[in-house]
Length: 458
Image (cartoon, rainbow, N blue to C red; front, side, top):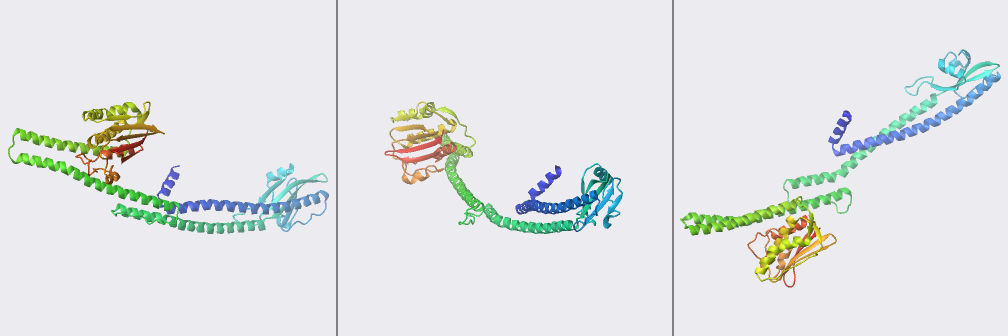
């Protein structure tokens, strides 16, 4: 078992081409051995059948001659005979086996008891001379027991089988070599594109930009599909790298502003002595900027947690209770501003979501509607076919048309009426929450106002 394990470990360390060639060689060896064995068995059976038929016919004629006391008939070419008494003494024999003991003591005893003995003398391999096939049987004549041994030479039969073995070994060896060579060439040809793809991927790993693998467009085999998949993966990696660079640039820009303001406030405060009121005002300004930094950091952490996907923990939630609790602070704020606030939902619906993430997403949409919109705010939720469609709309000026395509990008703000001092991560967080719930987020304009819709699995 340990030796087999070592062989398997050695085999797995070989290159793929070597493993394929070895597998082809082993498989072809078994197939060729089976085919050669079948051919050999069929030829041997045919030769033995002919030999046995000749031997049986010859023995019958010898039995008849001994039983009637007539001269022993000549047999087929290469035939021999012996006539023994029940003690094994030779009474008559062919010249070639006159003094040769063809039967053992045990066989002689078995024949004397009435059994027919058949066996071969000599072996096919290694080559021996005087190979025979014999049959021995008891015959009674004039009240006396005689043992008649009929034999035929196996030389032609053995020579034919040895020649057949040689030809089968030669043909099988050539076939195995040819199959191994074809397997090697085929494996090399099949894996050549894989090696080309590997070199291309290594180039990308070394820092090459906008790399695409050279994949034939007129094929549709497994290797070609692998190439298309790798190209798609490289496109995704390139896009992710571009997003990462853009994210770093945007985050650096967003962090620079509050840090610069804080540094300026502190420099001014330290430049000359300040009164207590001035220092208090400076600390308030610094505190505001620190709050912006904390909000930005928390938003970035939330986005990274949602991107991992492992923090979503769905649980059954009553839709009515969830929406009432999520919208309560914003309903009060709308009432203070003299604006309408409507909530529509299925009264008896229960959904499986993660309220820890969905509630701040809904809060972000309601907060945007309060700060940037006008008129009545409407929160609608509909369940259908295992999906929850949740939308927040207002009656304000809506999104600028050129902003809609980038509404859910990080650090993106509208340039018109929805420009604020926020982080630009609110709608990005909403989109991440939707994606983590196997859903999507959409932004659009209605007449009048704007609407953002979440369509998630529940």
